[in-house]
Length: 99
Image (cartoon, rainbow, N blue to C red; front, side, top):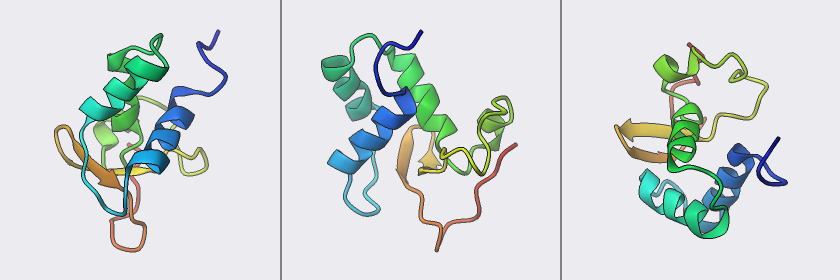
């Protein structure tokens, strides 16, 4: 059973809409903090795993999750470093990879 009305993925998309401007870089800390304040039943590990799964250039993580595919609305971020992301830009970034 889900903890909240929206999924973790949907809530991360909400966070991004509220907090990111353009190609602004971010890491998991503010996202985890936002969840702790607003959706405390969601574990930090779950948030970090979703950020990795929502990163278009992370096939090592995505290959283990068959629900992450082109038609599933998981392509939101581009991973720059271990814990550094920015919004995915389909005009300038390589196409999403799915394992």
